[in-house]
Length: 250
Image (cartoon, rainbow, N blue to C red; front, side, top):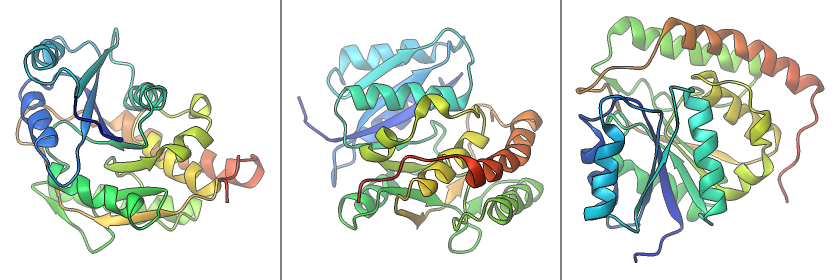
């Protein structure tokens, strides 16, 4: 068995075109060793069956699967993964998409920001050094970019890419945050996690990455998910004024 403190959580729903390739890309990295935890929300296309085959044939001690009974939301998938990773003793816990919009080769850079530079959380950021997005329609680029500007304005977060889903957490962040109190399920979940980590006093670094729109499979973005993010930040700002947050150990 190849020992590692690092696990990459990949939520899936109908990702049969991508899942084997992304698992192989993550597990083939050599600078650091990364295990993979797939959280599958009952994909009818057979995504989980592909993962099970890889677990049995090649990746018995490096690939793990949690199957859920339906499409329960991105946020709840990550919360389930966080709890699993904490229970299994991992020190560095990652969020990552299955569709190669996040480059596996950037995982060591996110890890190094926490492991070597002493940050508690690192974010693969599309906007910290300009706009680094490839193959997105211009309307979606502008919507995402100005949504992050809006979130920064309302919440006061000094993070350029507030909706980023490519993240490394040191386990102390996830142990400190009350995961059961995280309320949002869609992309507002990403904002809420960053906001809460900041309110708890954790040190966060944005690492510039290039985001590439998926080539295979279908995007899960919807108007409802986007509107949740826009309206949810108002509630987060209210919480920031009145809610008591557990503080990071100094």
